[in-house]
Length: 326
Image (cartoon, rainbow, N blue to C red; front, side, top):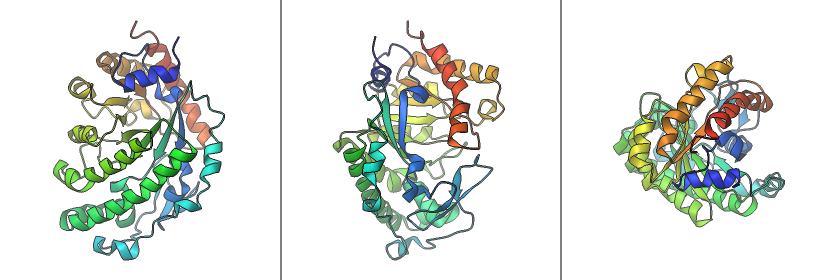
């Protein structure tokens, strides 16, 4: 019998796994909210860039940049006004110690690097100003993106040394429910080269790069492949996931599928609704291979309460995915 990690890696390598991998139960997460230097402290506060984060009810209690603040009003001034966090001030050794008890033969360890290139630009400028800057001053935006990449590569180096995860996921939500914030051409000119530069560094340090992008980003999934991402995670059904798997399933693995923005993603979603949605995901996407189930609900409260809300989703994934390929 193979381990859950081996089974997960089979799907990641476009082989037919023994069962449908479950990213909820198979993966142990590092980074993400623990990157307080990049996300602000738990409960809200200032991050290392000087951005103030507030916890909001509309984001299910998760911290988001406070409304109305503008750290950078002109992208051409980024060198004078943007301060990058000092990654050497972080206790990376302590962060790595937290994962010593994980059975690395059984579990996949994933480091989540939040606030990617586009997102950080919006945190500093606001969405409207950031998008305008991409249109009016693409060269200055690219210079900033390059410097931001160098900062993130320092994180890559320390993560590889102290945590040694299997996966390194970059979070950059470049899309809404309807489509990408910018044209695919603008994405390819201003953002794509720096996603690739970061992924190249991730691979050079022995980790597998993945891309997290919410929303309808199907137009740029081929670009994720060009950038070297082994998987696209938290894929939402506003995209043609089945079509993507048919066309690109030998080049990129899709992780997700669960309708978090619909009824199954609500706090009070019944187990029957959750069960039906998980079954739909597995029945619809798993036949194409290169698919790993993932889903979550937007539940406010503590980390413990969030993970408790994931239990019925994970249980349904194990139930329907266990014998799927037999």
